[in-house]
Length: 91
Image (cartoon, rainbow, N blue to C red; front, side, top):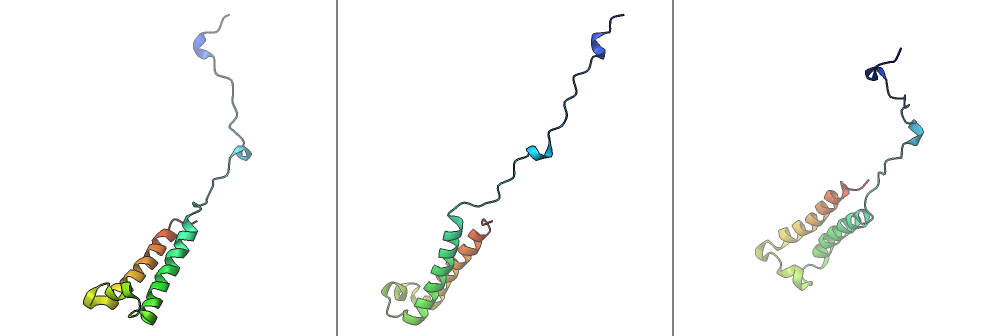
């Protein structure tokens, strides 16, 4: 007796092996670590140079007017903060 077409099933296909999976790449771009370290070092150097030789460096002495010290320290901390922000992208 012939079987109806609705009763036929597809051939069994086993699930793929777990060894066939490709590892996930957890790495950051090549520029992240050098830029992060450069921001940390530049911010620290900005603050140190301002406190050691601030009046002798013409562009540091002219920044900020009456708030010269506050603005120069804020610039240094802005670079350090940028380093911390960039460090969130580093893996």
